[in-house]
Each structure stands twice: as C-alpha cells, then as structure tokens.
Image (tube, rainbow, N blue to C red; front, top):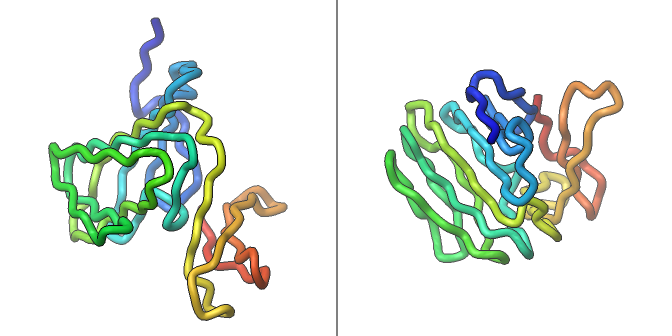
Length: 155
C-alpha cells in the first residue's frame, strides 16, 4: 500500500496552474492519475488531442470544465464525471471565472500514440504539434510540425 498527500506530490510544468502526477507519487504502474487545479483559461492538455490506446476519465471536484469534442463542447460541472474512449478527441478548458479542481485517470498508464493539434499563427490553421523541454529546462514548448513555429510556452 502507498499513501500520499496531494500537496506533497511534485507539481509539473504545463497548461494547468497545478498538475500533480499522483501515479508517480504512489508508484502506480498501470494507471495514470493526475490532480489538476485550473485557473480561469487553463486547460488539462497542451492541445486538442487523442490517445490511441488510453481511456481517460475526468472527475470535476469543483468548478467547471468545458471539453471540446468532435461532437461539440461538453460542459462538465462540479461533482460530474466524463469518460473518453481510446481514439476520442478532446481538450478540457476552464472557461469559467472560478478555479476548477479535477482528478484525471487513464488506463493503460502509457497511452501509446498521442496526437495533438494546436492553432499555428504562421500556418493559419490547426496543425500537428510536438512538445519539448527548453534547453534551459525552464519551460515546455509546443512546436508546429509543419513550419517549426513555437505555438505555446508553458512554465
């Protein structure tokens, strides 16, 4: 058995104000488990994405998160849960005025192929993107696969 306090788990850089990988802290090998706190405008992912092999479930503990999906926007309110099957496209964003707290679960832990698109100003459309750590290791950046432009920087 392993037990951790959420506040004791390390926080990671990304598009959320707080992201704590609880699976790492617990030593989980088969389940991805992440705790998020989203300030208004923050998102759960770096872009609109899908996992070929991973099923994801999001529990919104407080606040509200709007998920962009292939079928349109889906608001998920406090104490609601949403599930995405492998291959389903989604991106959850806090479009409200209050902080949102979310628990994200995924299985298998290693998600297989991950495809992400973001808007690239240089290309004028959404393009596939790559995420990388800066040389200074102080930020994560998203880069357009088509033209190489930086499309986002996350600390």
